[in-house]
Image (tube, rainbow, N blue to C red; front, top):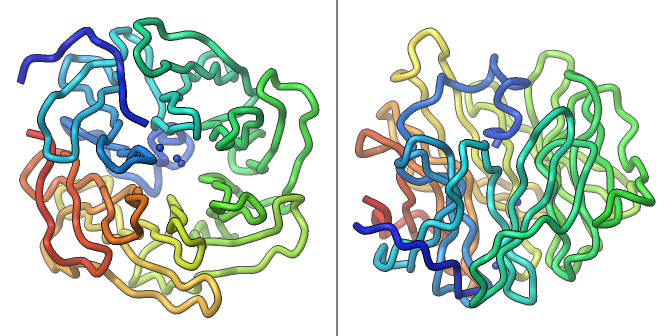
Length: 304
């Protein structure tokens, strides 16, 4: 497909890719990425994603059918997972010199503008576009921090000496889900109030089920989709990962599209109707964007 220079028009909200250097023991070596880290627009009619199809990791947008692919950025910089604000801006960050600079593209505009800054990794912007949530600190003691868009008013929400990352607000922004590593580097998903109080461990995955991470809240706030896998850096082709659905009230976990083959289903993003999930998968050889029903059926490839 021909990549157009036009900027994004549709409207949508975050793996470790931005933390890849820190999570080397948990993640496989990079593979060809034709489409990854999807973010479904609030209208459900578009998916933003990253791809190195042009050589560098840039941000792209496509329709949910895979047509009308638009290239948003054209730089040698490493762009983070994209997200959307309620007013229709597409937001992403670039990590340079221990600082993440946050950029946005508005609907109908052609310019990429810096709108914020965070002294940490993988900042997630709030739906109102006024606050950032990110990981800060030196590996492995990463803490979850909230700050205003300009970086002021920063407050640390977690205090555990463990590594914590992938923080994401619930739809009503009263809760925050995040990944935390224990002393053995096994990851679990935790949930806390937005002010950092009342932490509780949500998942209790065994090592056989892998390390859950990359939480994504369902639109009604009752479920969280995660990825969990086992990654073999010595033999990346033997790595495997699944998307799981976690019930927030009970912690019960359901594996979607279970497979024994060594391929990766990762980085879920919900559609606004709560009926479908976009995700990245290399089940056809290279990383692409896929969509499936929230019960794991009907998987179809979007990018090609």
